[in-house]
Image (cartoon, rainbow, N blue to C red; front, side, top):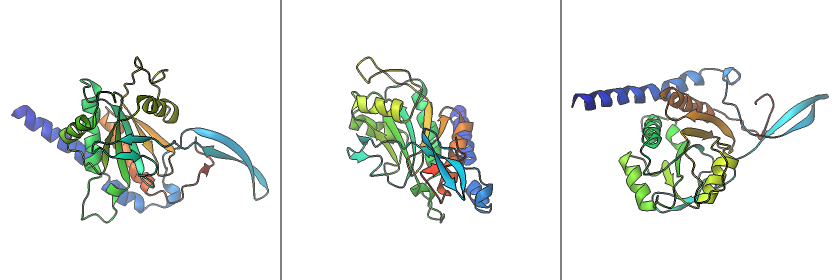
Length: 243
């Protein structure tokens, strides 16, 4: 009982540590120019443009392509069409994983709590972000298995999807769209991806961050970056100065 109480206490502290509301309120008081937004990743090309008679470089960042999968409720969903205008946090897992996945999913549970629905909040941060946990073992991770797994972690089925589908499409998405360093492969029978990374995608489908999902400090950083992205009013496809 003592160990359980200590675990609950530590988890409670971690959740409180992640709560982004105070950060959000402080950031609102700052001018837009003094807020450092998360960088964009994945340069598509660099153009030369004339601005006020001066030649400048203009960086165009690659957008993440769509992916259609099935969630834990048995609904076929498109991550770009059905989640249009939403920030996404994506991770990869499998139900029978005995090693990193339980801790990874537990940490995402803290993120979900940090952005939980609260009728007392006027800012609606819960509606700004969607959590996506994509199975790397879709052959065994059926809709029923995903539903049971989601319930085990008290997932909000509207805001946190556990997804399964075509293995080759999933593996191509992880490697070629999210650019995760998970080795080479073609999504075949012998291919397997196992990563602890979380990927943050903005509402315009640019990659805005990679985080170690097993590190609570990195989870806090992800929470802060989500809040910053909700404050980003101008979301141009082209940006100068970001990496």
